[in-house]
Image (cartoon, rainbow, N blue to C red; front, side):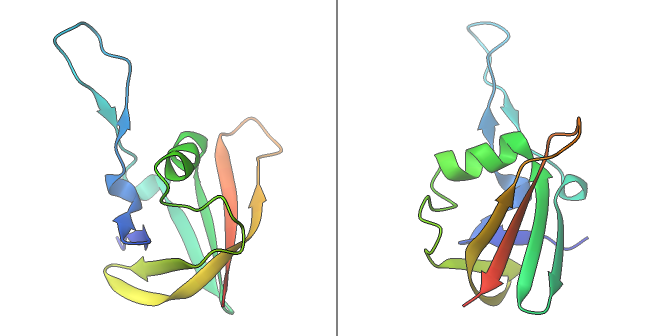
Length: 105
C-alpha cells in the first residue's frame, strides 16, 4: 500500500499523544495506511482521513492555516507536486471522516 506525505510528513506516522493510563505510561495514536484514503485525478488530490488526524495535522503545522499556502505532496517518497487546500469538508453522516481537496499550483 502506498503512503501519502504532506510537506515531508508521512500521514501514517503522525503520532497523537493520548491521555495516559497512569503516571508511568506514554501512549500515542497513529492511523494505519488503510485509514488514509486518497485519489489523484486531474491535478487534484482528494484526501479522506479521520477527524483526529486532520486536527493533528493543523495542530502540528503540517497543514498550514492559510488556505493558499504551498503544500508539497508525495506518494511513497516521490514528490507529485505543489498544491494548495481547495476544499475542506466535514462529514454529513455519523462517520468521523474529513475530506480535503488539494489543487495543483
